[in-house]
Amino acid sequence: MTTAPVVVILAAGQGTRMRSATPKVLHPLCGRPLVAWPVAAAREAGAAKVVVVGGPDRALAPGLPDDVVLAVQERPLGTADAVRAAAGEIDRDGPVVVLSGDVPLIDAATIRELAAAHVASGAAATMLTMVLPDPSGYGRVVRGPDGAVERVVETKKPGDATPEELEIREVNAGVYAFAGGPLLDVLGEVRADNAQGELYLPDVLPLLRARGHAVRAHLVDDPSLALGVNDRGDLAQVRELAQRRIHARHQANGVTIVDPGSTAIDVDVEIAPDATILPFCSLHGATRVGPGAQVGPQTTLIDATLGARVTVPHSYLVGAEVHDDATVGPFAYLRPGTVLRAGAKAGTFVEIKNSDIGRGTKVPHLSYIGDADVGEGTNLGAGTITANYDGRRKHRTTIGSGVRGGVDTAFVAPVTVGDEAWTAAGSVVTEDVPPGALAVARARQRNIEHYSERNKETQDP
Image (cartoon, rainbow, N blue to C red):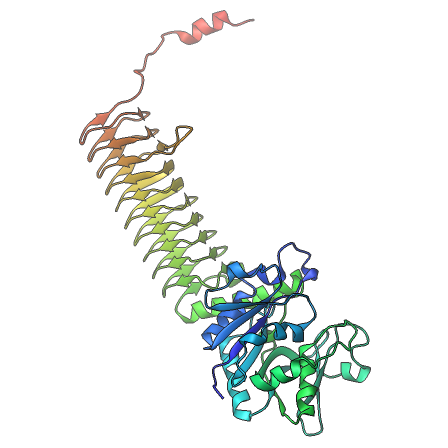
């Protein structure tokens, strides 16, 4: 028997208690859909193949990696029927591990340990179990006099279990390892003799025993590994635990998280050692934070990349790239396509979109830079605007290196400003500015003497 298991993840349930138009297993958890968590754990554990069982609408297909097989359960007839839908992907001569798509905290180490214990024991089935102070809602593990597992009694509806069985505190964690051949041989014999009229996967256990096969249990100490999500409250509980794990991983790698309770970090975010995450920050998606960077307080990063020693207080960055030693904020908004080169600055109340800001260039405050390329060592004064949209199309502005822009300058694209050029305060630049020139694009000031007195004479008493 090979030791790398086929992993089957059951994800076709309707999830009606979520009260949502979104399938339960597609609800997000720290940057991944619920079903993506056991998929990632199975792949990390070295699964020979990962099979996800979904419904006939194939709603899960777009979110699955290319190397994951989607099997379709045509009707919601229960977990045993769901495994039967994946039968064509199961190797008779190898182990099979069955997970649930709504149990996201199962990890690769536990999957490896379960598969290894199962193969070593020679059992036909090995189930993951745990002992809970309050086992309500879980299937109870009924053992025989020899300690072997006889059966699992479901407790979803009144009448599924006897009062004596409800007293049992060892519960089914919903994770199983099977020998492929024996599992396939008995799946068709499962009957819907329960209050819900469903084909329960645990009912294969007594069938295997009846054929003389051994059924073992693999007890785990961490109940969170098998926490399932049935409603929004469960999702919040699981999210808290998943976030705690993510924080612990970063902290072990040398990241300072000043207040974990107020900090949200998605599972795929990368943070280098010596970075500091201050309170009330959210880091999402494919965000990358470099060594020595300081994020926050109150900063949101979505698919953003920060270099070494970057500081970003009180700001919002989406799809932006900030190079080493650059500074952002406070109260800055960097939108997709923004590149802030090394040592550059996007200051207070600055918005930048789809623009490349050169090394050491400063956009200190109260400015909007959109669809622009700005050279090195330029300083754009307060209130600088690139007017990039003419009502029909977007146009780019090109500003050279060493440019000194006066306050309240508007660059009406498309326009090019040469290196070392200057603009006068209050200018609306509509024509190219040669290198080293001063652009004065404003009306000449004219003062009207005694205007206040004349105005009073014309006012009504």
